[in-house]
Length: 107
Image 1 (cartoon, rainbow, N blue to C red):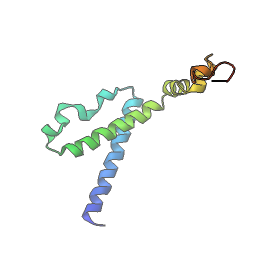
Image 2 (cartoon, rainbow, N blue to C red):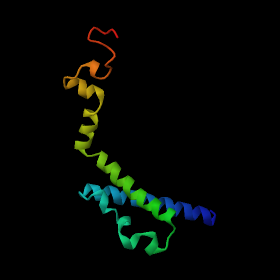
Image 3 (tube, rainbow, N blue to C red):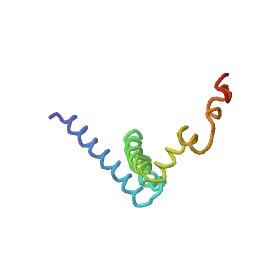
Image 4 (cartoon, rainbow, N blue to C red):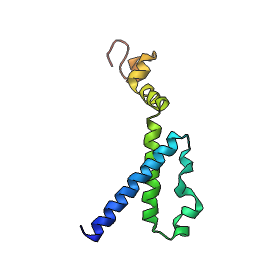
């Protein structure tokens, strides 16, 4: 394995670990704003790391948090309610989705 491959594998493991950290934070009820990479001492200007590297870490944590957030029962239910079929079941007519079609089905 070349030195570059070792760096890539290490980076991938770090990204996966950060995604898990974000998911864990959401499971514990923390906000997306609690991303540790938003803290001033973790910013590239303070750490000296390249902005691209910091951005990958910040986004990895956010992705983990977001995936866990979407798995919350309230978010799943809200997603289904936002589907057209969910609204139709709530009493909306088909013409609400296709106003050019009248009640008789003609346009």
